[in-house]
Length: 230
Image 1 (cartoon, rainbow, N blue to C red):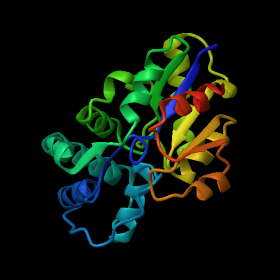
Image 2 (image 1 turned 45 degrees about the vertical axis):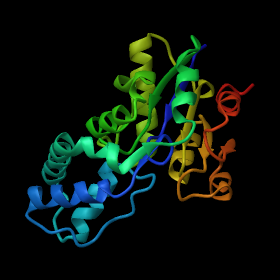
Image 3 (image 1 turned 90 degrees about the vertical axis):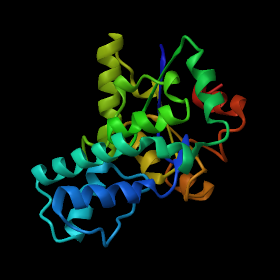
């Protein structure tokens, strides 16, 4: 049985502080003609949840059409400005090595579960050379639902379709830096690994139900041991 490894992106594999707010400012102005005045909480949340709250905070009805327009503008600004990722961000220490080590194994299928839109996820990983190690076609993305557990089940569904065999819960591992990542995994009975490289502490991730918490990804052997449960 292969292990399906699903990574969060922001603050787990990479960071690019400030660009998210800047891109939302541009997108909100383009999609709704409104200046950004209030910023929702971002960590661990899906683009669908963030967009819904953002529109409500600016007294705009969050209709499916309005959210779709906002997402189109987010993708458009990312298309124009993704080279800025190299100036504003970096791959987190150990992330390239951990991804490469898992990608080299025949018994691992590796993708993402991220709150980002799929197009933006691709830009973020490509900026730091992380994209060759993950199959982004089977990821779970933030345009699907405001509820992060739905992203996990969608990634499992995509992986099952592509590989032609099921990935039962005990073969699925989710890694992320927030309690949202942890509860999205445990909701489906998957293994949850916390990575304390974001705002959440080791204690926060343990309290959310993480099976293992890593301080970071710098110890590749420890990452593999946690993922493969060896």
